[in-house]
Amino acid sequence: MKARILSLFTLIFVLIGNACSPFTVTGTPGEQPTVEVETVPTVTAETPTPLSLDHVEIQVGVGSPIPIEIVASGSWADLCSQIAEVQSRIDGFQIDVTVLASTTESCSPGNQGLPFRFALPLNFADMPAGTYVITVNGASTTLEWPPEADPMTGSISGWVWHDECIPGVDGQAGPITPPPGCIQVGDQIGAYRANGVLDQNELPIEGIRLTLREGDCSSTSLAGIEDEVVTIASDLSYTFTGVKAGTHCVSIDALVEPNVAHLVPGGWTYPHTIDGIAAQTVTLAAGENKHDVNFGWDHQFK
Picture 1 (cartoon, rainbow, N blue to C red):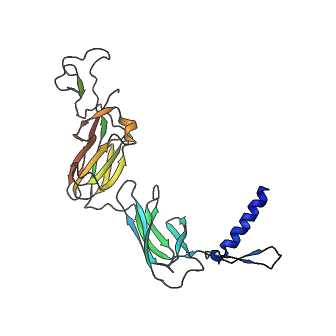
Picture 2 (cartoon, one colour):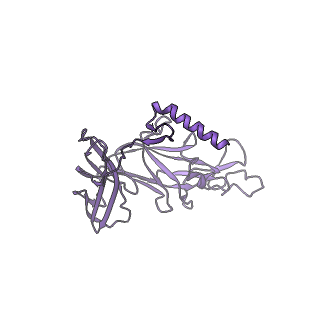
Picture 3 (tube, rainbow, N blue to C red):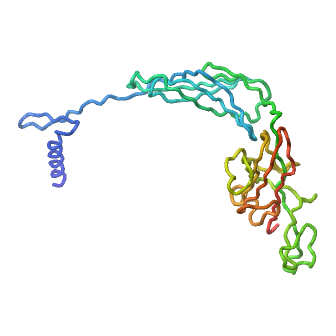
């Protein structure tokens, strides 16, 4: 009974709404009405074709690893064009890239010639040294790998090290005089912390992310990231390369990952901190390499 009432209600609704509906209801007296559905044109995409390019170049960034990008420019075939697929093939020192674009069959023929510019990243990690020919949709350029260092750029390097202080035997009062590698905390007799001096037996801390920014390390200028690196246990714990002449800020935030996992709990002993961030201002001359920009951390339980 409920199903029959629902069917009658649906029929009445269709008849009433026919005036503002895309459906047309037809029929003759005594016959069940039939519903004719107006045909809506189907929008389909044409087969993707190579995008027409006017210019292709390679941009080499600064960092480790060195960022490499293909930068291409041209004009869309029409207003509806979109990048559909990117194909690539490496054969020795030849890199071929094909960028395919698609459009819709119903697109208006007008509005052609809209300009575009896009960048495609290239991963050159572990690629052999040599001259590479890079072709994108028939337009070619070359890249010397690895790129020659700019004689006007320099580097900043140093250690993030474990600044050790062993104040005494656990559970016992600390000695009256500071043990080796320790300094007294304020006026508290027997309370010590690491001295902020890189001693010969103290080791670097792996896995710490450092940030290089443009400008000095005042609290209002810690922005505009130029590069980031993660420390490794080696003769130089970290290195920023390809750094331009000028004033820069090297900083470490102990309260962000992956630093939290390697540092906390503990505290900085060198240099001065700003809101928990250890930071040093470094000024480079053209082509200068600045060493020993170090950061000391005193682990609470190590």
